[in-house]
Image (cartoon, rainbow, N blue to C red; front, side, top):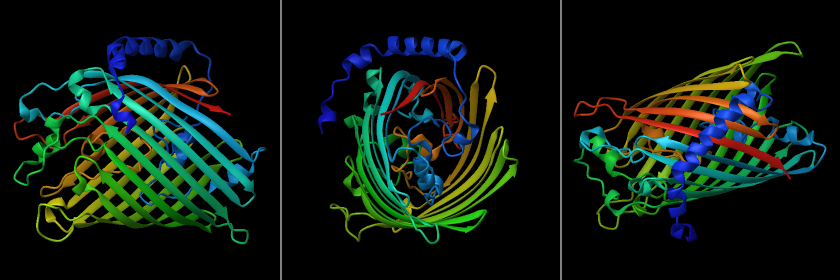
Length: 440
């Protein structure tokens, strides 16, 4: 609760100066610093931050597939344990942080913002068949314009896990736990109760960012290699989500997930490429509390998720994926179907640059429901637009040293359909960031 009282005035007063200094330093570093390239393969599961100390591990698909190399990689280390400190620091510009709908007739708030995170991660393999890991992440995003103060957010996450490799079969069992907590300064005027008579665009505007919550998650997974090129994962999970502004939107859930992954390697020992195909399915049942001011039974939702993706990894990376999410609610107004098509690529450029491109098209069908939210995401500052809008991203990344990198990111969010007033929703977000990690 102490973070609610944090005074962010000094951050706001210096935000513009800090942003300009960051841009200058990044521009200089891009072309004059000596660096080594990231491996293109590191972008297979971490689209924009492969330098993160927990990047691949946290970038889970629908079934949250277990990485079969996790335990094996740890066994090859000379030391039985490792401690890493990772951090990010940057500034950016957001053309519409409050996600104002164009039909309101009001001009959106355009503002600079500062963002930063730090993460401490520990990995220990006491023997050849067991691996222990723990990490703690904390971060903040502060906007310079007072009209966007309702979007300031502070977050922290605690994660722990145990991986066991069976001696006879080589199968893996993973037990993991996760705790997310977030505080947001939501303005009273922005917190409005939903009315089913409102239009879809009005609901998206009136509902605040889902960033004031507590979320805990427990998961057990079993990984088995079925064939030299085929592996499977089965997992069970339980979660609890509590949303402070609207307690009735909090839920307790249980889930089941399964996935298949196939990988074919081409080429010789010196230069290889691979083609990975994954198919995942998960089902989560969300139990919501009974509203105190309404009659009737408690609401229950069933969320089905199917995801399919093909990724080529070689001198460049290219991937194409499709995800279907269907939320079947006991209250038909909250039912939702979302189709998502994602294409991504990564390749090398001169000056030791790596370019990442990603395009996402989303089509939503719902009679009046609001958007789903995934607090398990490794991205600490997930926008509500990530859940509802199509988007396009371009990122330029460069190593400055062995454990230091710089990143320029531009992302645009687009309205899936023209708004009722004839204007189309569009939002621009540009960020410059430093990444770093250090083995302790």
